[in-house]
Image 1 (tube, one colour):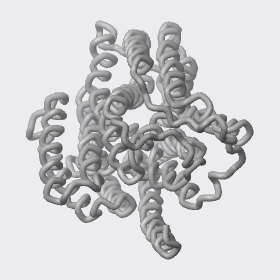
Image 2 (cartoon, one colour):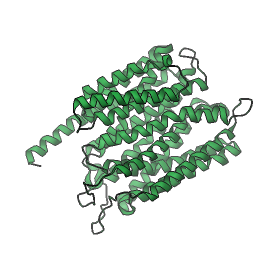
Image 3 (cartoon, rainbow, N blue to C red):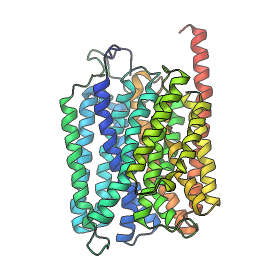
Image 4 (tube, rainbow, N blue to C red):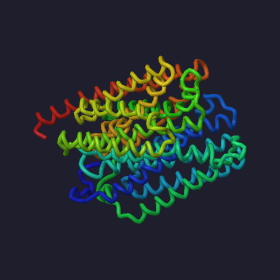
Length: 474
């Protein structure tokens, strides 16, 4: 945003941040339900892998369509969020998402796959508005230097939602609301999604009652139009990196249950696999809490290490209490937590460098999952979650850093790149049909290589910017 905005730095943003964090939790939960819907609808409608990935195509395709509409409005009429404010934008996104959840009722009643896809598209449009407004809003609730830390914290609660969703959502759909004989029935999705709609509306009511600070452009200032955000090279690269990140993360999560069903891997059924899927998303939660601490510039190295150890211990115990697995079955995750600690300290609280390190680790883990069998292959694929942790927030904040009055427009472009969640799984689904699930993970390998390069680029770019500012006296 620009320098004429009303942004009192002395304000205490704790209450607004807690309120928005609750919203992050809910949309993380509902988004991860797609990973449950894919194997469920695949069996219900006898779909191929390619056809089942239309779930992600419609949901994440809505991000592209919604962001594209937003971007064209912003370049022709001026930024909508600057006009109506973040609070109204967030509330509109919640209402649209709740409507998408309600549409699951007729889709399940008529047991018609295209209706499910339509409901997912509307749900995705609602979350598009939330991504554009809520992420940028969190980045503005404090200094730019601590934006990555704050966004990692809110994303950690988003990941808490994605961790609970496979266990609770999987229980509701695969067991609690399933047919008495255990067979798959479309009606099992009706009540859960009506519940989700109700909770979203309650969150909207809470947000409407909480006083949120306004970061609107002042009335006397001319609304900026045009393609100004595209002048920034790091934003354009960031858009491509976000496409690859969301595509890679969604593709891996979408295929975990099918991957663990493979005879050469673990030969698990859906009821067992959903617990391991929760570990994948639980790893992201651990990493985001650690990232929020590691990227906090105000803490000493000693305090960071102590707080990170405490956070990792608490979150690990929370995950253990959620999943229906023994300690021996999830103890391997302790190794990944230690590796995560090492990676954070090598990154030295630099968002760009840390991003490159994490992407490199995921490339290695994916190759291991493709080449190995049994538990080693399973552990490799599940470990990717904890190293995905800081990628969204770091890519997002690096991409919109220094955009000033073009922040919301740039944010809409970055959110548009969530299209990767629609495109990449479709390609992986095609490869899975042709060459098998295990070999199809070559697609996410290329995604994480792009992220690695983006992190390296931003490390050099930010160093150049600081040098330039130092020479100019700013």
